[in-house]
Image (cartoon, rainbow, N blue to C red):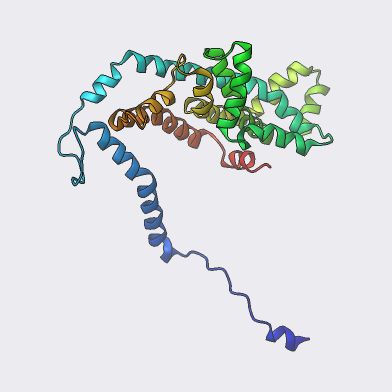
Length: 287
């Protein structure tokens, strides 16, 4: 028996990184970040300030800020920016209000077909957004909600709600039952338990879901375009118009893309400072 064990080929051990590999790993990571993030941003910036850019020139020969000034002074762009901000804020708060009781039920109450319900909740993000937008657009057209701010807000909530429910569920699952029982034994009612126990402990989940819902709403295009365009204009819809194949305007599209990118950068910097990585990982990988 020992002979057979000795004759069995030894499995190769997985190589672990050492201090000597730090330089190589760091260079590789920074190189990938430069290729994936820095290079596209640099090209976008060059397009936004280029006064003509044609081959064989590698970089523009002339530069101008006139397009930035024209875009920032455009009343239609200001209206689209305000629409995007208002819609994103309303969608974020409405999503949190709707998701909280659903997430509480998913986190605390066992019931049959729970797995099926979870998949049903995730359906709007599993199915392609354009398919969801076309189906909902037909319903909203019959209900008179198309081409209205209310219709755009409702259709965006359909897309942000699944992720908020997942993150809130992951957060609520970490609340010990002993705290809830202790609050009830001290005379707290349902509203008191919600206000003094559940909501304070659910703040990380609310922040995580709220930040991601805001970004998802601010940059959402498919559903907003099908339900709201051309009456309701948002920044992604304006970007699409500048990227029309028949009248493509890359300099103006680059400026709109930078404006769209700014809130996302601010949100994710805040998220990195105030949110826990374990909560995000639990919410993203819950299924």
